[in-house]
Length: 348
Image 1: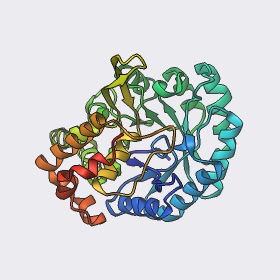
Image 2: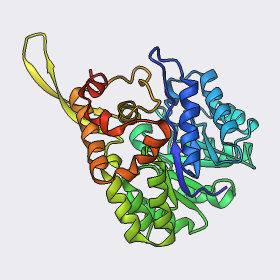
Image 3: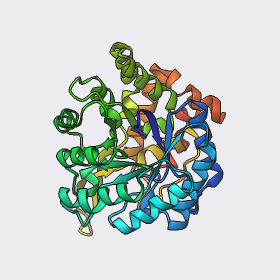
Image 4: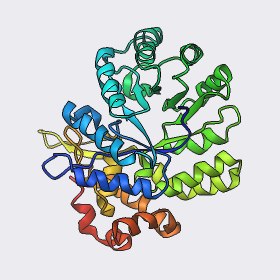
């Protein structure tokens, strides 16, 4: 399966006690299906795979596969920094009906590109020849990266490696990948804010996005991608502009004050990584989300303000982006945006 279109990296909603909110997960997936999403990606980074137990991981995959069957695609998260563990994870997903698995570059132990190619991706491709193996390149998280040359070698040898999730932010690399592999291969954006640029760049010709923001605005993201795919770059560009404030808050950086034991005050730059901001946004709007599981925690008030200001801008200028969420979940977005207590409760 060669991926294209819009796929939502679905959050894993949590209860106040940090247990998985299964009813909330079902509701979130149903929202995606109702909006015509191409597919759902469970237990990725957005789904907090690092802190889910193995039992929770498999349950999330099983539930999402069952709910999406015949309605939309599922790309199950199965990557690891251990090849044998990735085989077990992918094997479970495949036995439960997954036709494709997302496999991130091996984090922390940081194998070379050649090792990633031969000792990881190739092993998985041979182990599951009838399953699409989708490499996920994100050096900012993994500390390593499969080179586009080695990706090209894999694609030439293994027909089930026909898509890559590109989250390097390196447009030159993406252009090189396209030149090496050709149009029979799919490049999926792993950075919401670069999706339009990747799809409109004639050197890259990206095929779609695996999105975080589509957790709250799946129809708008789907429309942008469809317009870009059809060649309507003007229309896609307008949709990208309407979405821009949300696309820019997948990661939030703010300066926060610390008071040292001496009483001195210092400023520290805090980077709130995905899924902290999207879960803050969803909670603020009233969608099933709940807290992130530790060590992920609450944002500072400055961070929450960045999120609130972004969604306010979209609601004021392009309410159609968020109206489907309002209708589906039965929430009054305007009232929640105006209620300081909602957002204060989300901050440290």
